[in-house]
Image (cartoon, rainbow, N blue to C red):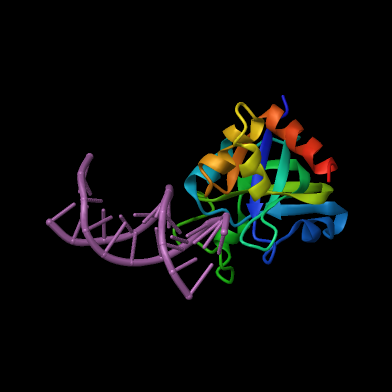
Amino acid sequence: MTQYWLFKSEPDEYSIDDLAAEPSGVGVWDGIRNYQARNLLRDKVKQGDKAFFYHSSCKQVGIAGRMTVVRAGYPDPAQFDQGSGYYDAKASMNTPRWYCVDVSFEQKFARTVLLSELKELAAEIESPPAEMVLLNQSRLSIQPVTGPQWAYIVALAQNS
DNA sequence: GCCAACGTTGGC
DNA sequence: GCCAACGTTGGC
């Protein structure tokens, strides 16, 4: 069964345009250094799952597009790389601490579905956005999205 | 740049 | 295991 997710990134670091520009449109979703998010990447995110690409800490905060998970969780190589900002001295090859997944570019939405817009829509009773993790546990960088939330936001992205 | 919310560290 | 101090995230 296909599962849905929302992955956050600061576009100054890595944006949906950067993913689209990758050779064959495949990128490594690495650098996740939060245990709750790590557990999802390691145990729950599967090949074939769909994910929103969320832009945080930028001018247009919101959902910029979507992608497909093409490789489930595996140890994040950056944790072993002393030259990387994501290096972790407490991690070893035998006991990796952090995980990443590979994603492939699917679509950049015609417009970004803004966080402010989702917050406004969430004020409506029983609207799909109201239950989003994004609005209730906002700091989590890898978070689940329900099927109805996914469909609602994809439809919203087609409307101006 | 500010600050609220949350996560992590480390002494005891 | 508790909790104070500190660090980080991320919206505004």
